[in-house]
Length: 484
Image (tube, rainbow, N blue to C red; front, side, top):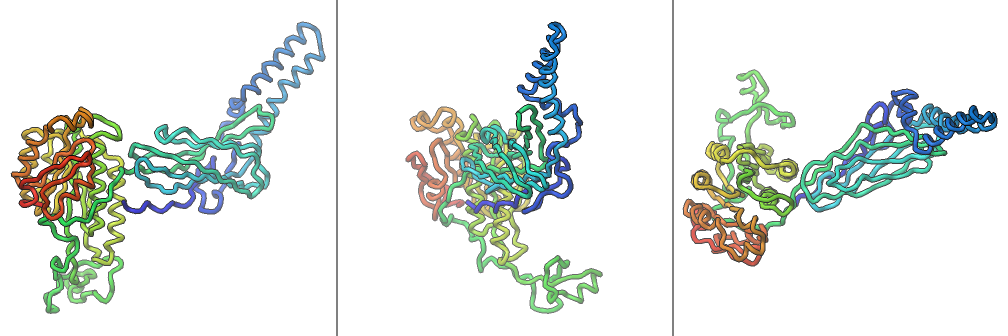
């Protein structure tokens, strides 16, 4: 799997203005912890159970003093009523310049892995703070809401706390905003203020490391035999293009610039990058069950593993779904020198897309067929759910547009029956696999317990079989000789 993204700097905002804090300092402008709009009425709503009890007891004592004629009891009642009100006014008028910030490490994690969230509170005022209670909002999928208590923060001081989050489900989860709760020393009143900044934790699918096998009929990602000579021999035969930011000025073609009226540069010999399309079937009708161990999650994880593997082999990878939506990988415009950086960016884009991909409402693969028929050549790796006769014939025709094609058909019936029952029953997808092999695909039926890494390893050099994760061998009669 690609290396996780570097942890972003601390991000935060003051609880009143919402302005973002810098990496090492508080937010500009007032960061008042207790003086937010809402007035004294909002502060009175922050009375705790103790404060309300003191008010009730004071009112009862004053009422009893009139009934019983006891002036001393009246003074006691007034004192009980005054204490929580004084605490409310004091807390309301207290001004703290407090900046909160958050850092994720890392911001992109695979499902089932932990990420660390570090919170930082900076006191930018000239007064020490009182008792501060911090609470960060996190989705229930990531665990309970973390809470911390800070006793006292000196002027210009800083406090850092951290917690960990973990999710078995892929997706994008918001973290924040951070809540700051202020309390008086007697515990009569508590005021809660929320910061405005939040961060997003991206949980990407689990991936497997695939063996660097050589698929029959496949070309390498970058090869000496796959170069296009775009700059011809003569000066008059130069193929120019428009100037782009960062181009070397020594490549400016002045004759073409004068002809077209804009700055033009010479195209030089560029390596042509081989392409790979990863087709992911997201039709709800093609899968049964849900959860981390469902057939659809297996397909998403396998698509992510394949995309990362092919990017590592310098392929230009694009992700295609049954709806026809395409997420392009890196093109070869930057040349071989920028291949690694482009692959890293493409890997991040593909993983972010697969982190949130869900079931589509469609029931056909015709949109994906139209995209493949538009002229894309290269390796096609497909992960498909259950297919009816119409969709099976459509997938069989997809093979004719690609130089090499590998398809994994998930046996929905075996998945719904469970792993143990699936090992004893004959897979219903065998007939579909046979039809696809006759059409030129390298096809394999995937059942519960199979691991993509072992299935992939069996594809090297047109081998005769693939070994499933549950100790099952998938035999290939025609697939490797005619396609991959």
